[in-house]
Length: 100
Image (cartoon, rainbow, N blue to C red; front, side, top):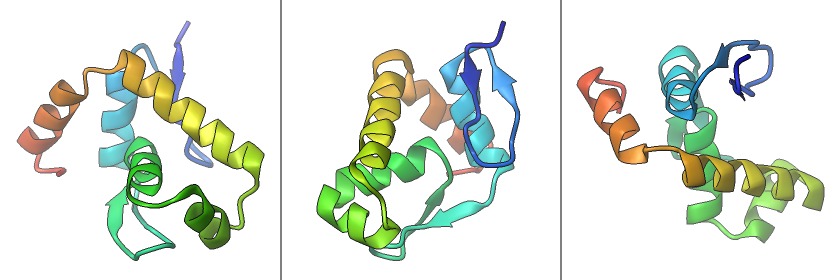
């Protein structure tokens, strides 16, 4: 059974490991424009990371009309990914593919 699901709306892709999920999100989906600052980032994990590392929670809530549940959900996803993923390897693979 696959442990990781893409999580991007309309995509049912599932993966055995988190690294494959992040690579899929980055390579197979359209880029995301941050509603706070306009920066273009890969959809999925990298968009969540950008939002919470570069902006305050209040900025995120205002720009995305989010509530506290949406913030907590994304913070939980970010935390779980960062606890389990070899992000250095993900970045290296994405650079090799020319995706970053």
